[in-house]
Image (tube, each protein chain N blue to C red):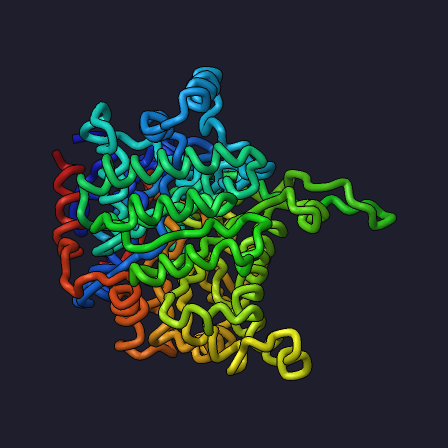
Length: 123
Length: 425
């Protein structure tokens, strides 16, 4: 594994995302509510560039106490990134697909040191 | 050097942009080029039997071939008024295809091309980018919005648009790229016009078959079509049923979300047409006519085989033309792979065995639609032999569409290197 500096932490917007090609290993770095997250830019479905898609709030089915539905609503807590190849969505904080937890992005080690963001990627 | 480029022990770190409808196809499909390099670059032939024209960007070119002045003026008026695909009478729900912008390529193509002013050139360049990126030798082109023309109550529109599309394809597009091949759109609501188009366009060397866009309420076994099928059989080129969605069908109007309609309606139309085709014993009447069933995945085929076999044994009097079980005829037909049901490999393996995939299955991408399959959808299946993968990815299609088994695509490594060089420059 090698450490790669991908720039100043202050260069990221919150919420925001940058995707880097680190010598062949592509990594999406996300900043959400002050926390950084890093995932391989590779969808577990068919290897699509999952981290380069839209960032959207999770949609939820809004069910009332009497089990009637108000339709769909935005989640107030979960933000997803969508693979632009086919629409697979992943929780930016956990990398997990909302429907099937077995479908998940692969994590990349990240640290912030002296104001810079460092990734640990395969050499 | 831009700020985002920093050197490291791994060389340059390059920032990748968000993918949008403006993204170059070569960047969109970058991972597919890597898959081609690692998985199937040595395969002798890769044929994608279902890729699509997204008409909106090219509609003005197609209208240039419109032979009816009234319809041409109507279309040009609609185009000036902001209608992206005039005359289509678009079905409800189609604007939901791109998942609210989640899948941008469904809304494109909006990428830059090298010769934007040259008729036909933009489409050819964009499709060539997709072929090179996915490692495809030949791509069969289908329309998109025109898939629904069979439901258009204005019969003359289907006829004239079919003719304009086929002229655009044969006169403008195909001469610019030998790796693109096409099918004649049959305006199936008027059999005389279908026959005329077979005679007029069928001999073009890059026209490899005829398509019935299956979203329609026309019984394919009706006697009016028998002469047409004989004509097609005599050409030696296949008849291809391309399924599609249609939210206006009364049964589907009960479905409240696009996913529900989409999951059922493609299969629905091929189920109807296949049932009529088999129960009326058309395979007995046209034994040399090759039929291909496109864009319904595969799971519906063993379902229908079992269903029809079961009922035919009890109700032979209603299908007296059959000399074998329905499944035996269906095992001699051809099927396209996309959208391949890959969530349960055990079921998929059984399905492929039942349809005799090694000889009858044809790879299709459906690019640039939202549920496209790259060739890796086949190469990564653990239960297929290497020879079966080669057959499905190209050799079966060569038999069906009479294509030479000769590599014409560039090496994947060259495709990757060329794009990297473009980025540096």
